Length: 237
Image 1 (spheres, rainbow, N blue to C red):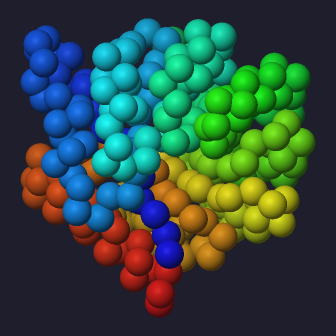
Image 2 (cartoon, one colour):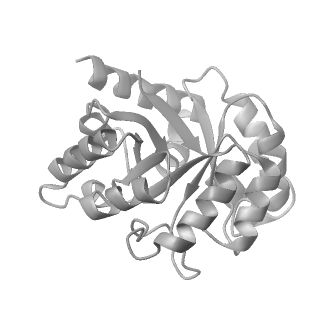
């Protein structure tokens, strides 16, 4: 009906703050089977600030849940992804100075470089998603360069921008009409997820930071179960 991908980058953030091997992202991923999670999302950043190469290798080798591998469209990351062969790759913009992803990918102005990266990933049997703002030009460009999925950036909606839900609804319709699968994510919480989950074209939400924060209060399996309940309730309402 609608899937929930859980981003576990900040499990690695916590581990790296102290050093050592605890908490281990793969162990956490395995513990979440049955919680309502439909897939694992990890972002291997160029500066390796949270997920490390060894984490990516172990998680992609694990067959428990589909892995969504977020990455910049660099030669290094394409080579890593084609070697590890996750279920899917989501190409995102990345700046070294950013705390978190700040906006969608500018597909329209980087068609050729993205077309090359996407072709290499698809040749390796990887489903390719592009993380974009809900702008018609970017969605059309995503279809043109060969993406199979568009993930709509919900950050402006989460920050309360006026009319952003309407923009996302139209973006979801455009994505589906272009023959692409529609996902969404960024900044989603228990309080704001329902209107996004109710959009019928959206097949998957990817959520991380909020769930890890809620885990400090109610535990990660409980946080995931509640998020999935809200998503399903919104879709079936």
